[in-house]
Amino acid sequence: MRISTLFVRRDLDPVNTARYLMVLPPLQAIGELARLLSGCTIDDTPCPAPGAIARAALAYAGRAVDIDAIHPERRFVLSILAALAGLFHRLGGSS
Image 1 (cartoon, rainbow, N blue to C red):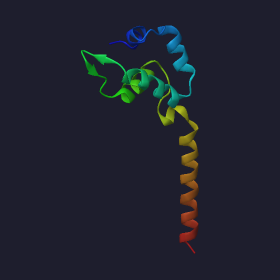
Image 2: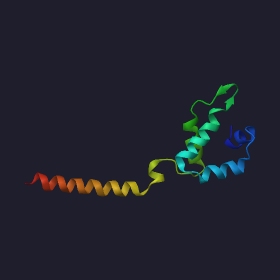
Image 3: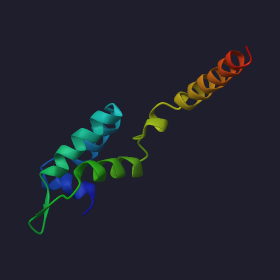
């Protein structure tokens, strides 16, 4: 089932709902879409993993949903901290 079909079945406008999800903060967008998916059934079977499906759908739509995509500077800061920790370890170990 397409996500847009889900929106229509829930009486939501697919275009406006997609736009809304794209402007929310990433984790909130995942939560909102997972909430919509959790109430969905296909052949009387509830959605097995609404959070995972929400994350995958938003990622497929081009939305940043993982921590490295949300905060690309994180990797740079961690590399600086690791370099500083290595430097302090070498300075402390040589005394």
